Image (cartoon, rainbow, N blue to C red; front, side, top):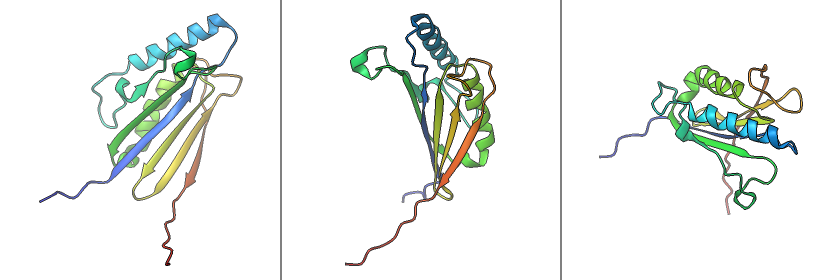
Length: 148
């Protein structure tokens, strides 16, 4: 007999790198960002944040990097919303080490709907060690039945 499923939470999002005509800045920012992600452990305590959650696109124009490199990530957790402050602390610690223009995290919970968290750089882009600011948006899906 099948066991009942525990409460699952999906977390996913993107980190937008710095678009620039300055080749040295592009190289420095992308190497710094790659290093920060690769320095994450592959085994982590809950709520885990590991390098395998992240995907860093290549520099190839035809492979998804036009001007902005978009780093994406995703994971499935058991009720991570009850440990959300810890997860956010780990994510912000990663962001503090990186160059970026904005970062967006989507949190999809079974009990409290969907939440969107957005970090935006205060200037033209965030450099490692600068302060962070976050904005939270909450949306709730409402299902309704149409009788025909």
